[in-house]
Image (cartoon, rainbow, N blue to C red; front, side, top):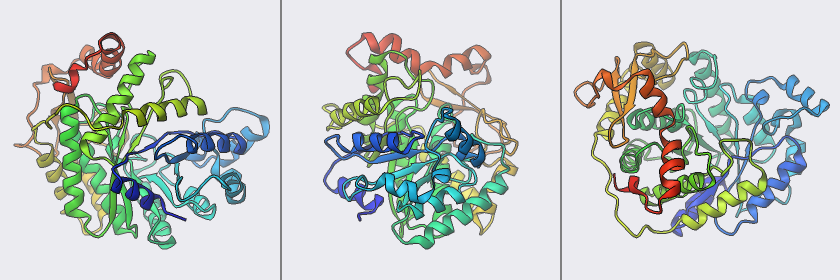
Amino acid sequence: MTSFSAFVADAAAEGRLVVQPRMGFAEPARMREGLLAVRAVPGRTAGTITLDSYTRVGAHDAARRALRDGAPLNGFPLVVHGPDVTRRMLDGVVSPDFPVQVRHGSPAPYDIVRTLLDAGLDATEGGPVSYCLPYSRTPLRDSVREWRRTCELMGGHGPDAHLETFGGCMLGQLCPPSLLVALSVLEALFFRAHGLRSVSLSYAQQTNAAQDLEAIAALRTLAGELLPDVRWHVVLYTYMGVYPRSTTGATTLLRDSVELAVRSGAERVIVKTEVEAQRIPTPAENVAALRHALDAARPPTDELRPATTGVLAEARALVEAVLDLDDDLGRGLELAFQRGYLDVPYCLHADNAGRTRAALDEQGRLRWVSIGSMPIGGLARTLPPEALTARSLLAMLTHVEHRYDNVLARTPARPHLTD
């Protein structure tokens, strides 16, 4: 069976973008139906099994009761179903032309990963920082410990086991790109240090296409320098913040994310649907999003130059500062957050210093307002403190939603692509 990473590499060699939904259903029959629908879409598609919230936090008894009582779950309870049920559900679905990845959101994913490996799958995602700080109250040191043993489990499974860092998607929005790039690279280095030889590095579409191009170029540069003995690719996420509510706005944003993926050389893109702002999408709605994405995956007819705002220099400084803290990268990550060398704006986790702030400038680019103790003084061009107020923060949170719903939904041209 072709591995997940080999499938993506083969598609990239053909110049084809891999498109993938975020899809999960509680019942095996429904999950199988969704995967088969995705598989039937013409083009290079990968399947996803997204897990439920109970499984993500290890509350397997609660997931079991929900299944028994017919209560709704927002994903597939992998551990409760177990490897045998999951393997039967996947029989005749997974193939060399259709790999499947498990997405979960857990700071302690050992049981999840052991189950998916036993079920015959080889790909998942997350990370000790990115699946701890935004999603849980788990202490960072505990997440680092759990992810260490999880990586060792996957690494021992074989060279094709694939792990995607979620570090480039921290909080979904309002995190300047240099920190997203640094976290994505650091988590990939953590995976490598604990046995993985096949990884992908994530980046989430933000608020300005030119700045995003700069960020993905920086991500590729650092990965090329620091992961020379690892098979890697870049995966772009369609915008993860407050999503447009109109069909036209949502579709336009999706198409712009695919255009960004093509322009930047990203090998894979995670799409969103037209109903993302309202509810969990159906298989048919996921299929529609995949078709929109594949239709948009063509060479652009115009040129968009990357911005030059110092993303690479800032990201490199952050990565190097963490690597200098300790020979053990897990310990280095813990120390980096203790000292504020890594500090995610607007993140309320107890292990995050919370001294950094960011805002949008007049071109819609994410800029630092305060860098706290992060080692990028002299590199970051900060906005003045008055750029951030309660009113402006609320406006920033809905900036993309309003732009696509209120402006782009009524305008054929896409002026933000020339910012």
